[in-house]
Image 1 (cartoon, one colour):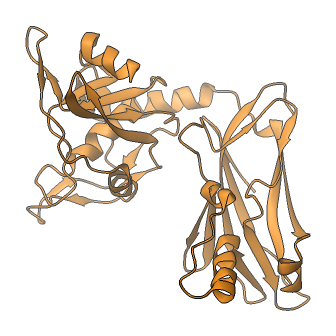
Image 2 (tube, rainbow, N blue to C red):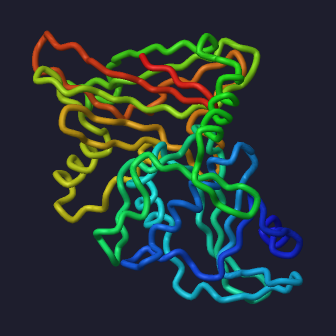
Length: 318
């Protein structure tokens, strides 16, 4: 909160600070889509510093502050879902409510967005006038001083120039996939193994990574999230209304089921810079925390998977 108080007291609007008197609407509202433009524009600015949009505060001419309490703050999950469904790649941000000198305010902190450009991934229609398209697929916006502009070719060239100037660190890491048996009798008796990866950093510098795994489905192998099986086993032993199993590893691992593949992601926690931090000449063992259970229906069966690893400025597929 010290940083927010400092911004409110001393900062003017700029490429990394904006003030909004009224909270962005998430319900059916003519200005619902404005948040897509404003947050992506902040993220697309070439500066890697944190950016802030302060809600419930407006600086008038002459520097005087005007406040309007944020009475019913919207939860971050609602904003996250809306932005994720319209912008790619995924934006990193927090939406936090707090108080400043007895005023109820909120703020967006936009951080660690190094996968520029952030663009609209579909046409975005106006909620009140469905025939009107507010933003087109592929549109991008960028913060320039105190204004938000549509991205031009020059903006894209500057973004890619900065990305390509960064050191390529693909050779610094080694990825080792493996299938292993459980020492836990309950899982081994069910004929289950787990599928996971180790990542080795062989350089003399630490590295921060985001990790995503796409496992392609096949008839010979069944993949099951461990937490789902644990909850089913708990129901069988304690009844249908048993308390769900609290699995600390699951808070780091997210599963999404698609038609022909399963996507498994290592989640970055709020206090972490990236999903995985590996010190120099060190390794991250069992990246997905033994959460991917494997059941082979026969002797045959090959796991086909694609792992995507992103640092601040590069990506590698295996």
